[in-house]
Image: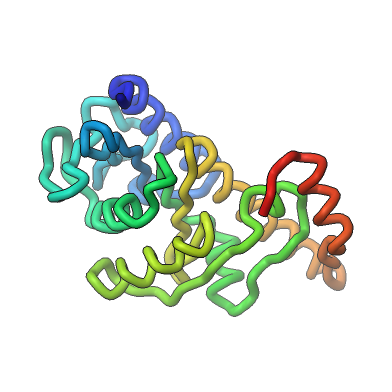
Length: 211
């Protein structure tokens, strides 16, 4: 069973962390966790200053029917969270952020590759999809993309990341933005080479995760 009070606080904390890291604007982004046993999700509300968000403002939404069960005003992107949870029964948390360098880079047509060990372990297979406002078609495309990876970037918008914990989902976005910054800095000085296949394999072996 989901420890609701603890996760409400963790959702507030992760959105504050995103704001402090420059990964969202004061009203941007969202995050959620799912309780499959009790058939609901907890999702951050819309139109709330991310530095002032409080646990009692977190919105509880029915997983199957999307019915608001309590909390503040639901984000228009809650439909994305619900669709992803229904399709990805192996995950427990979703974080949506607006990593500016990564969004700019990918929207311009360049996807960062294996430039850091963190990127290899947490991102690895970044999928990019075209921008679309929330709706059935965009939800379907995002959900389909997340069936092949754990992080998707919507061009001109932001990233959706999934994980077993809120921190894991957040860490993917942070690792993506870090790789984008390193890539941009490297290109100023003539470009930065990707890690070799051998180095990638060594990172996977050393950090104990498989692709």
